Every structure is written in C-alpha cells, then in structure tokens.
Amino acid sequence: MPKEHVDTRNLQVHDIPQQHDSLQAVSDNVTLVVTQAFGPGGDNLAGFSDIKFNGYPAVSLLLRTPDGREGVVHLSPIHGDKRKVGFTDISPGTRCTLLCPVTKRPLDKLGPVDDGSGAHYYALYLTPKLTKGHAVAITDIWDHFHSRIVDDEAVISYWAQTHAI
Image 1: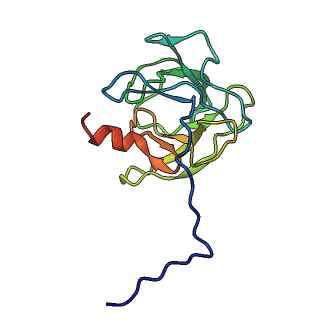
Image 2: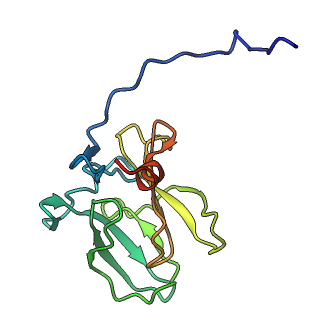
C-alpha cells in the first residue's frame, strides 16, 4: 500500500479557537443569536436602533430597491427567525442593494447562493476584524430566507439545522 503524502512544510496545526462574543447559544436546543454584526466599515449593526426581538437588539441594514426607494430594515438577530420591522414594503423576490446604515457603503459580496435563485450572499462580519471566515451570509433577494452563519470557516448554522440536540 502506498504511503500517503503529507506536505509537512505547509501543514499548520491550530488550537481550538475561542468562542466569539458575537454568537451566543440561547438554550441547549442550539438557538443562535447574533449579538455583533459588523458592516464593511467596522460599524456594529446589532443595536444600531432601539428595536429588539425577544430582548436581543435587532441587526439593521439600509436597503435600496431597483425603483430607487431606500430605508432601514431591522432584522431579528435570532438565526432562522423571519421577523423584521421598518422598511418592509418590498415585493417578495425583489433584488435589493444591501448597505451599511452608518457609512452607506454596500455590504461585501461573498458569492452566489447555490439554489438556482440567482441570489448572492453578502457579509455581515461577526468580529471587528472583518474576515469572511466569521460572518453571517445574507442574500440580496427580499424574502429569500437562505442565510448562513460561518464561524472559523465552518457553516455552523447548517450544522445546527441538521443535528438535533
């Protein structure tokens, strides 16, 4: 049997990373709450407004529709919770431009959603370092509920949805 090749010069071993303050398990049933969400300029968009969902500060985004309308929407920080308030008079299926309500800069594009919808993922970063390996990936299509939470390069929201605890 041939010996497996391991590139030891480029092998990196890391300790288990510390838990980030941006994600909190609410109960033993793996409910994820985003407590920090940073825009492209490093501004924390969780708690941007006074709006709360189940006692947790909303995550706020500035949206622009193709017809030029613009407003701030406040999203529930509880992953999988579809509640939102504010600028919500948008037809389902509308592609929106996602912006930081502080800087008015567009959110960073992560890539296409692999469900055939034509939607794209955009980043809300979980740490002030603004790294794509620690982000909430949200889509640019209104009422297209296909967000993902990525932490330490792993899609933990998918794991939480598919593993009963």
